[in-house]
Image 1 (tube, helix red, strand yellow):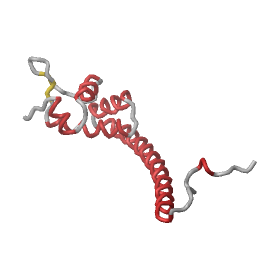
Image 2 (spheres, rainbow, N blue to C red):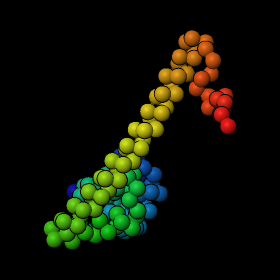
Image 3 (tube, rainbow, N blue to C red):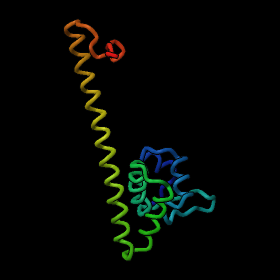
Image 4 (cartoon, rainbow, N blue to C red):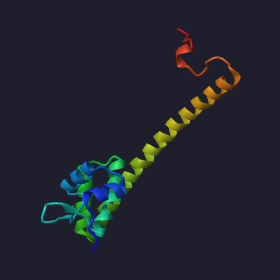
Amino acid sequence: MSAYTVKQISDKFNITTHTIRFYDDQGLFPDVVRDIHGTRLFSDENLDWIPLVLCLRNTGMSIMDIKHYVDLCIQGESTVRERYEIILKQKSKAESDLAELQHRLEILQMKENCYEQILSQKSGDACNPATRKVAN
């Protein structure tokens, strides 16, 4: 059985040691053991939780809701329906966030194209909202 330190986990998943310790203190990584010096040691099984917790957190799920999800996982098969509903809800939120990001990207692309035209044609600054006259 392999044992990984917080530093090794930090390097492997590109997250801060502080974040790992905080998430572990919140109970988001079940069954992490400590050695006789109090150093956290993550097993191969613990590693499976980390990408999931990071994904849920990065899609905006609260620590409390992630903890609830983790607790449901630990309870086992009787909670599959509830876990499924949680994942569907989070997926829907991620899709909504993605659509908003896509909209922002389209605006930036439009502005990029506008500036490229100005720079290539040395024309006026039609992309600048501050130079547009508003009719009263």
